[in-house]
Length: 164
Image 1 (cartoon, rainbow, N blue to C red):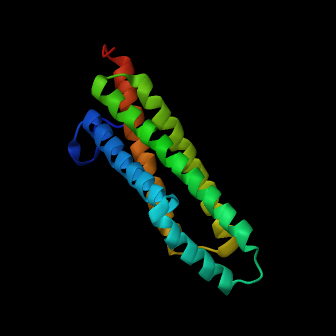
Image 2: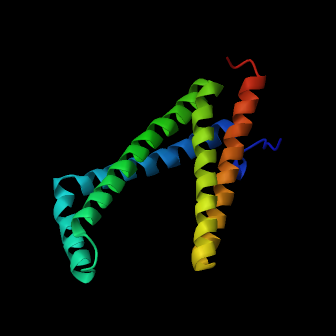
Image 3: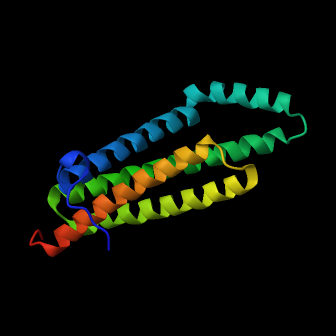
């Protein structure tokens, strides 16, 4: 199986995993805040204006159903952001305390996310053709795969050592 001995820029696997966890934790927290604002009172006028404009521009759609679907999507996204906060926190805690089993949830979620992203992009490319977004997606996949490799390598190092 593939593995690496250090993270990018020559830092240790432990430091790299903590950096990866911190960056993704910050992204998840930003998602929680933004979706929370969107679902909260301060975002309701923003959404109402957007819904009214969309419904006016597209009179053939059921506006009430559109609003309901949009709210469901926001609540699901909020749940996923909170879930990712927990998963990223487990990664950071597992690295700091040298507990390899706490890295596994992050690895599973990241692999599933990568697979879903690839399948989704292939379906979009089949429907709409290749675009510049396809190139960005491939670069994102490579970065995600590298992050997964770093975390997996560090988990393997911890499991083979007398860390626990």
